[in-house]
Image (cartoon, rainbow, N blue to C red; front, side):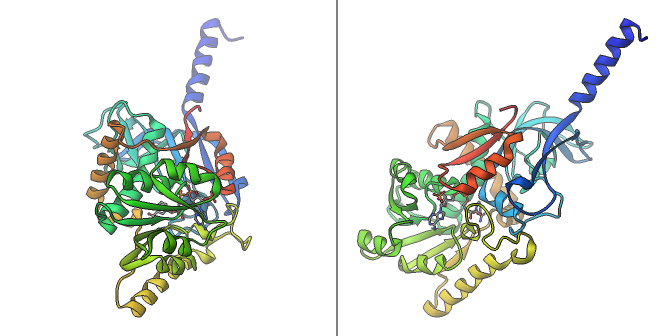
Length: 366
Ligand SMILES: NC(=O)c1ccc[n+]([C@@H]2O[C@H](COP(=O)([O-])OP(=O)(O)OC[C@H]3O[C@@H](n4cnc5c(N)ncnc54)[C@H](OP(=O)(O)O)[C@@H]3O)[C@@H](O)[C@H]2O)c1
């Protein structure tokens, strides 16, 4: 029989063992939302140069669904933990790390791995989050708003009064484009389903119902000569339609592969890497075709991950500028739902079904 002291010690040891474990979501086979499995395991230990981050909020985005299906060009090897973007607090520093304090709030775009209670990341990948920001709102800026901001200001270099067409305007990136475009005085048109129209109007755009209207005709009717930029997140043959909505000298900024999924799944029903580069190849084809036909670069491609790899300082600078806009309440990310991490499967089901306005966020203990 253990003594009362031994019993207390055993209880403490069990509690320690419990707290040293954490939950993460794992994809072991490409496929539907049912492939998101909840696993419990020991805390990861930070290597030299790494920081262990206690995740407070992880974003759910269409690129997560594309990776789950195995068709996003960035899809890691199986098994993997999805999750492009996170906000959390510094929990433990690996050897040789300085410049961060335990408990400090940080953000990162690891591309995968954020659907976890704890994650170890290189210290250089972390961006400090100013105090006072709510984690769910802050995480919405990391992928969606940086994408929108860089496409507007670094790729298109928009000017006040220019006309833009934003596809998927009620979605995560779309609503970010509308909010940031409004700040610089753009004339904005946004395609969305009828349910998203009030939000598009509220954010300063003129909604075009993509299910019942031909957006090329609508743009011609509403503007006369077309738009300066189309933000094209749909992909496939849709790119060709987008080119028709341009005014002379205009450009299509291609950034998304939304058309690769139907109801959140691959239309072929065969998930996996076979078609991983197909959607990107279609963009390149249209880029070449538009160039050959008009002798101009009329399709340009934007990729947050490549820009971050090539210009990491720019990513930090832009995310920091966005945190400041949020602190001043000049932008207000739309949060569609906050769900606990263990409901990642439901989050994917919801996003795949469509009609989600803004961003779904997985929160700690939510
Ligand atoms: N290049 C980059 O660096 C980068 C970074 C982030 C995201 N992305 C891409 O950006 C896209 C959007 O991502 P997200 O997370 O914002 O997705 P999201 O929140 O699901 O938004 C997508 C939106 O597109 C709408 N939509 C679907 N089909 C459409 C069509 N034919 N015409 C007009 N709108 C349509 C959806 O409306 P319903 O829900 O009503 O169907 C939804 O509101 C994805 O393709 C993603 O891969 C690219």
